Length: 216
Ligand code: ZN
Ligand code: ZN
Image (tube, rainbow, N blue to C red; front, side, top):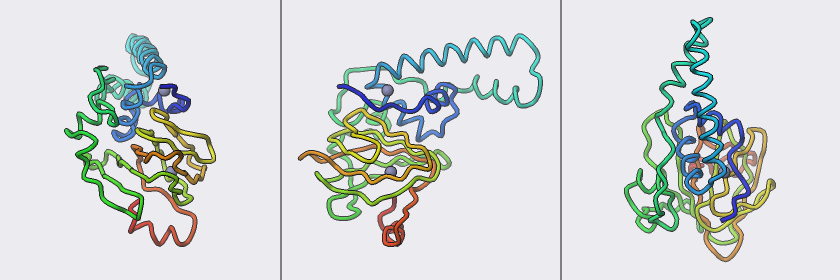
């Protein structure tokens, strides 16, 4: 698997520091299971963080802000890097399969519109949102932007948008001001995991009306 699109540097730093919303951290953990490059980066970042922590702890914290940052870092082992095992499911990365407690062919999909199905992963309140989306070959989604952070990782098939082509393992980590219109490529259906801290923002009138129905 050749991975061309990774979470942004800022996202990886926040992941290593344990400051990402749980949903987003979950997606980064999924990506880390298939991306040795990001695994190595996160490990390096954690080491740097630990060294910084030692330096800071050697001297009394200068102000409340530093104390908060240090405490946060110390408690950052909430979502440790997953142990890499042989993948048991062809679609779901190990952390997700483990959390869901089911395989990809047992997912109770709900149809949003023809050719597009969704499964919302239940998360504790305040953790953000994780959805799985399954789209038929060549389906074009509506043009939309995102409020807050939203990361998408391809689990099966491929899609393209204004920012490039995404295949299994690739992560789209778009800046908030970017609007895009994903289109499914190839003859294969496309399954993605989408982690966000807020629902997507649609720019056209009809999509805006459809938003409550389609739920994204
Ligand atoms: Zn990566
Ligand atoms: Zn999007």
